Length: 127
Image (cartoon, rainbow, N blue to C red; front, side):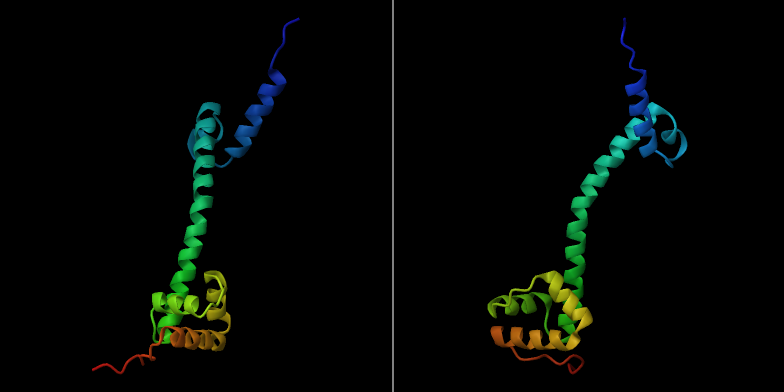
């Protein structure tokens, strides 16, 4: 008796076509195009899951830079002061503090400023 692959083949096809649901043109319902597009989509999804971590970190840095500049210092000076003061908070936590609790962030900025030994630059007083 010969073996037919109708059940496994159908399962494989259904699996791919289910993943390809909603794709543009033939990519959603023709097997060869669906397989190619699903493979490409899964590859880019994998890559972008890695990229997302960097994007989120970049967002934290932008937020910290804005908050630090309101306190009269740059992001790099602020982070340098935080490290020299041995404050072990990561960028995510610092960003959340800057957004949700500006008073605490102001205190952190003051600690950072003392650690690197600079005076506060008042914004808008330059001639």
